[in-house]
Length: 468
Image 1 (cartoon, rainbow, N blue to C red):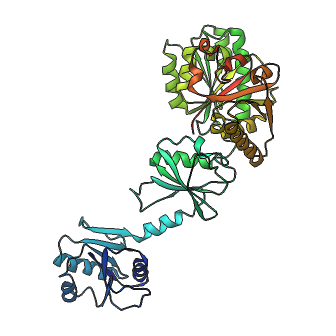
Image 2 (image 1 turned 90 degrees about the vertical axis):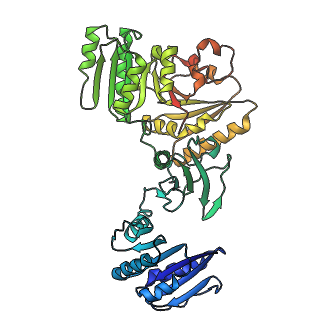
Image 3 (image 1 turned 60 degrees about the vertical axis):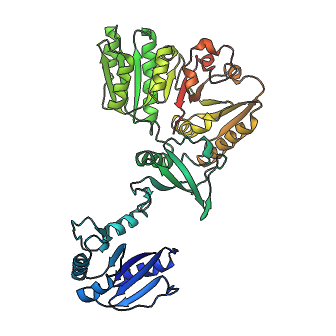
């Protein structure tokens, strides 16, 4: 049995004693000293011993401290009483650990005296009730933010997502509270509006997850970044295409209303370069790279410098095996511009594959379609994996209700790529997974619609990284 001494005076001390009485443990015996005795309910006399005397009296306190205590708790109202009580304890027990409720910003250099700042505790607890501020466990684990609870708002990008398709790297959803009831998470459980999620993970990762959960539509290219980046390699893109490419990028810029960076590498035509330079404005930055630098090095430097959220390239550049892999490694959304008008686009087409990657990127897809005013079309190629596909369809139908965004579901008996090849005025949106980095020759005998993305190369396409 461990002996613990509680020295109390005032309402907070009494409240602490009552909470201690209610705390279940059979391992501790509590010795309680009060200047004026109080009555407490449900006291177990075998676990609690009460004394009434002034702890600033050295003689009286020294008699009690003849016993071996593992800890002393001091919760008193008067700063002088606290200081004298600590002095008495130290005169008798040099190494005894003392926990002090500190109302007065007292400082103590004794390593065995722990000052609990009452003002900090109250301010921290009040902070928990502020909207849009994550609630962090203060007295669990390291207390550094590795345990967090987040309320899922109605318009969150996490609403109606199955837990199994949320990529949880260096963090986990460990519990869900719904209607004041605890639900244990499972892969098939769907997150609902106003769910309270209990998260565990790296503090820096949880801060990003918190922002992602609270994010609503109209923020893209956030959370990937805050700027659009048009990347033109003039050794790959012919001069006739460059002006049309820039015009379409400018149109996208007006829709997303984020700053645009135009980066030219391998410049080889003075007239085109001058035309691009004249586009400079408060919202448009133009950079010409005259040095013969590695493309991957240029992109990595610019991602950090400009906080890029969307990379825009021509279909010729995306067709390059090396550049496509470089873009995949950037973990950023990529808009591939084809030789078609952009302003006339009406629909965003999604092809449902046997995996559930479309559910993972659904919030980004809805955000893009909202800002670009696209109608959503989900093409479901009937196959043997219909159960998982139906869950993805359910997810998209739920999101369409939340965001008041219509979506059409097409059940295709033939390859939907062939169906889309007959369609006009649409953009193809698909997950940017590693399988898209393979050389095209390896996709000739596949039935995977994602690996066959290049069969829709004549259409604009957006590739979204499969991540949080």
